[in-house]
Length: 313
Image (cartoon, rainbow, N blue to C red; front, side, top):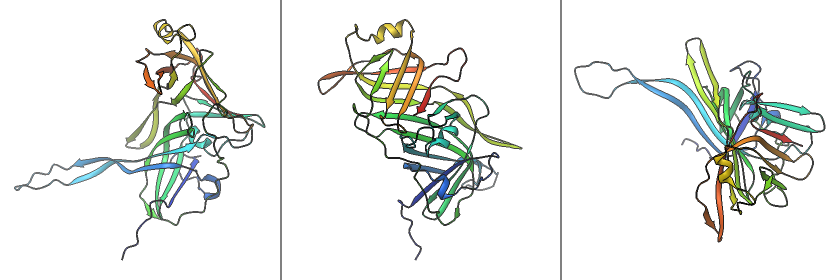
């Protein structure tokens, strides 16, 4: 009888490529990712019909084309535990069109770039079946919900590699630290336009447009555009404290900032210094308290590539 594959037996590795779409030799000791909620689309593409003419009725043969792989998963938002040391998920940010700037013993900062974007080689095991993505680039959404674990949701697209039976490697996950629940004690700062508001949920979508470009002599996954989006659900306040309608009507550019964590090595500050607040929607009732979703567009300054920053200290 054929052996079954247990769904929970998963291993995920990711490493930056030094040569595009070339395996940089991943190891479980150095490149393992501590992930949750993994979803794999192992053979995306098209089925190209041959459209053969015959003198009878039948189904039509097809040829698979445009093959690529998409993997989605989440990691917990936590620092490395040491200020100035990149977290285990740092390579993933770099694979999403972000620069990594390290100040020794002080900070690690991620911010968007518009050229010379890096790529990842990703290996995912389900049982002993290895699915690989080469030349992968992606998008990410960072989210914090009150009384929940802050997470980053990743979506990576890579060039297709034929799956194979390969034994799973042993993994080392010390680069991933235990997260803190998003709460008043652990999330000391949330401000819009320098006003502290009561926050239920917060999310920043990097908004990368990731596309396969599959031509003769050129097969790549590229990030062709970016449009960040910031959404938060907050308690409604008197307009004398915070007036989202006036800010939206005047197209006033405002800063947005959230700080999660209080211990050095595990403090994440996400800043979007120049945001346009969109038209507010209706208020909703939650526990008898009025709340409202506010949507903002992080915009660049005159120099660009500064729509947001994620700084770990």
